[in-house]
Length: 463
Image (cartoon, rainbow, N blue to C red; front, side):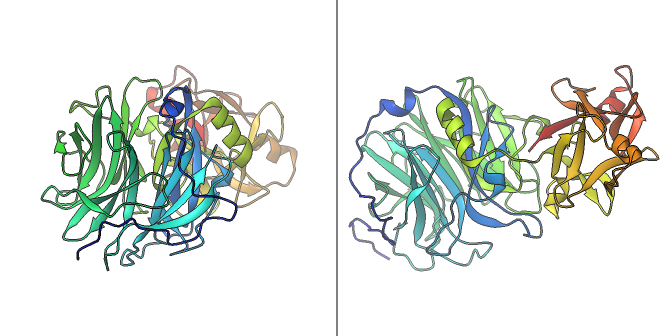
């Protein structure tokens, strides 16, 4: 189907009171700031879809590896047009230092639904998302518009919106824009002779880097171009893959300037959500797999994006949306396992699972000693993790002295890793909470215990 070289217009009217004036572009606005933290966008799914939510979710991180969901892992805004849901939200800091979010117009798992549009939001400082609209990217019938990414094309003096489409094959299209309200006609951006999906693009040192999934073999690859122009990329890395299946490549330059991370998302909600690689040289072919001990994605998060933020932006977004009022406990030696309750038992199981709230705990002052801690179940309020016959159980608080003592622990430096935590029993002061055969119990442990026993008793308190 031939497309005219006209500019496409909005599929929805912008929020009242907002104008479509041009950007006062300041190329130094974004680069002059010092980024001290990161913000992530995503949507949520879980194995049985009980945690599925297709609104815009946010999380923050100081180190870019371990994440805290904002707004109690609820969406901060949800589309009101098109499919009434979004996937693959991509956040980009524009030349004037403000933000834009573009996202796939799709609710749920109905991948046969093909929209010509993308959802778009504006944000000045991440405390609100306004100007909601949809922009029409093409006029093809039965062609999807998935997983957008954005970069600034300095040669054109415009933003490029690149997305997955399936015209003659699975390829990437690009539309150019100055305001994220009107866009140029689409062009083929990357079609290497095999089907591709999920581009992410960053410009660094005058080179444009693109990471993508090769659908023919299921691996992620990196390509680069000296111009960033359509059809100018050459693949330069070997294939990357972790787990049974991977997609959603997301490339991120570290705030400290010491290297890059590459995230990959499993495409199924029943698999582990994210995998991670790191490199000190984006131009090389030397990606290293990071251990899952080193990173913790937001709860139930799926395909999104990450941007560096300033200290002021971090403080503003946390103040506006709030950090979680619950914690999760991640196992040291089974780093994809989390402490949860199941039919009254306390155990560790591989994430993700449902009900997902079984792993969420309110870590409150100790019932027997406020200097310690107790763990109250989020989805069974009034019930606490306690030991009984040395085995951990979830039980309703009967307010007896025995119950309060059994449910109280002292948080100490982790027996296997001082940056993590261990939990010493209040009423058995040489005993620690640990897993054995995936079930939690208390056993006598110390710094001289075996390495395996100390790892069993070490957890990361995360969210």
